[in-house]
Length: 570
Image 1 (cartoon, rainbow, N blue to C red):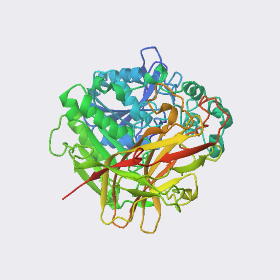
Image 2 (image 1 turned 120 degrees about the horizontal axis):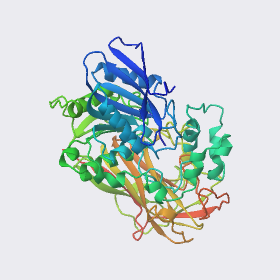
Image 3 (image 1 turned 180 degrees about the horizontal axis):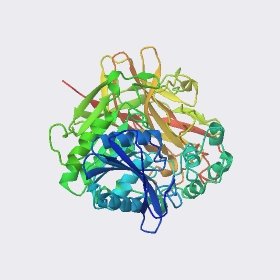
Image 4 (image 1 turned 45 degrees about the vertical axis):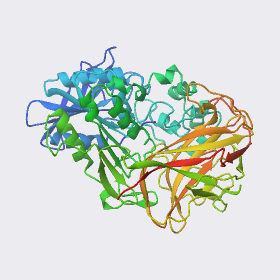
């Protein structure tokens, strides 16, 4: 949903407090008046040398004075920037009521105008921040505020239902709504979250937490892509934006799909050639908390995995806020970490021009159930083969391996135990005779039928080690009722064979010689996605479940496959 790393005098006055750094002075709790009279609270970090500075702005719902923000602020101030940290409306020391995303665009225009107009400012503002703090940069940029000269959005959430194409919220998002209930961060510790996620209906899950969460209830009242959700779109409106941006995420970020997509959309649709050419993409071997370490889940990505991220960001803002045009500030259009090879690579485009969509087809004798079945994955199209079948029970969903709360959903995890289940179909290549480099967009086409009135199809891509350990790479899903788009739910007819397009997101990985490429196909991944109750009834209010027999087809008329962007190098 959104993650990242006391309002003072009523007349907007400020205090100058001692700083941990003698070269930085801090103005705490500066009041910024919004267009409707609500006052937001800002802390301003200023270099002691010089009178006017370009501004780096962070707006956050997570407390502008937490340790991570203070450390970031001091780093920018030491570099000669004014750093402004603002509690968003209704959070921290800021007045008003917190309604996620609904006020942040217009408030952002007011905050940027204030930053640009202060005596210590050069008038040039760059915005930074991740997750919630990334998405609100995009929403503000739609209004084209004067003074906004550059953005660094990290791990940005997408438009509604791009990363959660279920028609409703992820169950795990409830822990975010609970943690941001009120002005201060709430302690999630006393709650048994895994039990909460099992609660039905979804619309009253907040009550299972022991809270009354108005924002949760309002969001759950809107199923599918209606005007309520469309009001928060920015990806479909990229042609209204004209700002250089440094897009940053990790291959294991649980909101990863938004960042490469934003980069592509910005390069293709921003209003001016200058802004289009000034887009930059950085993707590392990280989760939602970028640049945290060299290990993630089961994998060690080596000493190159952690970089001087602040230095990379500074080079970008030096160019666009200070006008320093040099080889040092001219970042490559794309810098990606290639997992498996465990090395950084610069590219002119993403996906790389050398990447070719290569189909790997599902094969079996009708018994691909579990890792002990007969499922195969191969580049040859299927011949006449019987479908694979399994029983999908919403009350016994396929587990998705994850921590309990929203901070990081899934990772580079070992799915050996999950693959023992008969409701998980497993298709694996023969051991690879040479390295296979996969960089870019992964998609799947699955032909499926169900005896019930709705159907989810999950596709997971895994890297199988020579010892047989299947490590998750990336995954995606499609919900049957939204198979033709999120704007309108369409009934699923029991027994009808449907062609389902599954967005499996992006990756950058070399499958090493001796490893194998595997996909799993299932009808649940809980609690990452809500359980499809399979009745066709309301997603948010439904409590009745239906057990279904699901068939996955792979034959000449129904060539189910995954499409991998395979890079061929000399």
